[in-house]
Amino acid sequence: MNMPNKARVDNLVYMEGISKYFGKIMALDDVYFSIKPREIVGLVGDNGAGKSTLIKILSGLYPPAKGVIYFDGKKINFSSPKDAIDAGIETTHQDLALVDDLEIHRNIFMGREPKRLLVGFIPYLNKQKMIHEAEKALENIGIHVDSVEDIVRNLSGGEKQSVSIGRATYFKAKLVIMDEPTAAMSLKETKKILELMVRLRETGSAVIFISHNIHHVFSIADRLAILSHGKKIADLKISETTEEEVSTIIMNN
Amino acid sequence: MAALKLKKKSFKMRGLGVLVAVIALAVIFSIANSNFLSPYNLLITVRMASELGIIAAGVTLLMIAGEFDLSVGSTYALSPMVTAILYSNFNVPIIFAVMVGLMLALVLGFINGFITTKAGIPSFITTLGTMLIYRAVVLVMAGGMPIKIRSQALISDVIGGTIGELFPVAIIWFLFFIGISYYILEHTAFGNKIRATGGNKEAAIAAGINTTRVKIITFMFVSFLAAFAGLVQCFRLGSVAPLNGRGFELQAIAASVIGGTSLFGGFGTIIGTALGVLITGMIKNGIVLLGVSVYWQNGFLGAILIAAVIINTFISKRRR
Image (cartoon, rainbow over all chains, first blue to last red; front, side):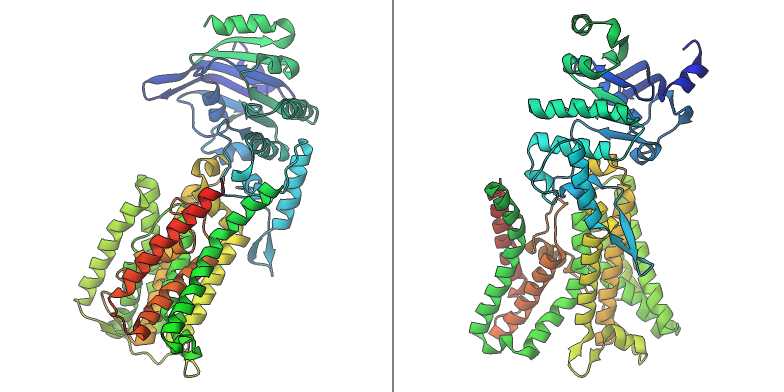
């Protein structure tokens, strides 16, 4: 904030003075948020703090009412989620954003279906590739489903979440945003997802994840930001704080 | 594993239901009148279904995308009417007259899609309105009277003629558009986007799909098919009557739903719709062969529609 140019350049994402209203409700109030390449940042805070709103703005679902966002050093103006995806931002949402009536592999490639051209001009969906890559995507995160040709409606909550995460992590993004990635998961599945986030960092992605579980955040994150009633009330390095301190801050606001 | 297999089976059983209905109707009608299954009569049955079938293929794609088009019946009359008037009253060459009619349909479909998506009103309402508006335009243009179209040109035979003496080209067009619609839905990226848009619009948007564009294009596709179906009838009969197509919009929806298409979007099969359309043809034809009053045609269709939805719903619930 004192050296805006440095902040823009050093960080993968620099969100400057972000405000967002829904009618009269102020969901976000002058929030500054940043994340460096290959950093894992936890976004925590009580319900209604504005965490989901902040990442929805970053993933292109809606624009901020006030404020500027810099991605990779450039000012950005996402007019749709497609812009964010094209820029290298992948997101999983709390409501999973999967189509129940569609098969797993079609869900994973929704919006960027691999295609070929038959005899030079007839568009042809490459289903074999979709099935094969979908299986790889799920293997990569260590999750197993019976068949990727099954429709999502038939999956358990944890399996659905895995598909959502599998999609976000398959496309080699610069930034992966996850909203409550372990919410519906068993202990085993949760461990795999936490390990996955560490692997993402190792392979070059930055990760933002929203979680109600401070312990999970402390086990893998480099930093955490605490939101409360639309404002950022703390931004701390994990090494410089404790779980008790963070819990206390959240409770007292 | 067994539970999963049962779930998968139920998913496909929704399609089986309509196949069972087709077979059951065939059996019932052929018992009542042994001529029902004669090759000549089967041909008539399918031909009676063809024009509706072309429209229903498009309507199914649109319903999968989560929208309705009640204006197809009016477009079915309006596009060929414009073609007929241009050709008969203004001596426009027939090929151009046909092209103008089809391009007009694309515009009519665009209007439906544009209003629905940009104004954010239910397509049911938009197309209820355009159904009335487009029909009014047809009636005014025709002055309430049928317009004749006497053309010996090749295109007249290609669209509305017969192969040999007996095989109506209409059936080939029906199979053609069913095939195209099936291909789009199953084998193209656009088809996947249609299913995503109708299945969960918010998820589709979050995945980067331009759902507005998907819907508008699909609306244009439906109108094009409705216009083409109208041209098939126009060239087959040699005239266009201003009230043509009245009620087709509901029959197309009924055929789709009987075939398993969901009213809520996200699910539907072209094969199911083709069978649903076949059922409408069988009813129309069977009623006549039975000597039952023609007025019962739609009544019969209505009864089958209700039965089909009850059965499909029952199967869906058992799946859970």
